[in-house]
Image (cartoon, rainbow, N blue to C red):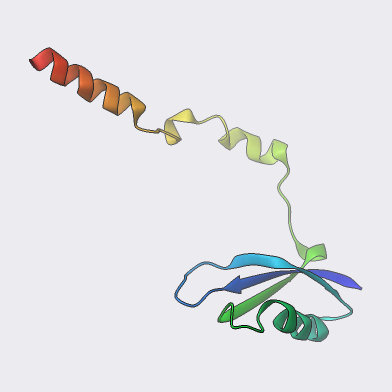
Length: 91
């Protein structure tokens, strides 16, 4: 048996969403099982199956260099503080 991850694309949306996983002996049976388990009430207009054995995973060490970039995650607090100061100084 192989494990498949199931993704559905809801009507009117651009992105696929993870719906769950199933176990099946082959691709054809997996498609039928995924349709019957995850799309029988028209939850999505498109269906993707990904064999879990074929997923490529980037571990934490591989992704870590991108975690230390705080300038990319500005919540606007610095800008708001600067604008507040400018308003107060201008009075």
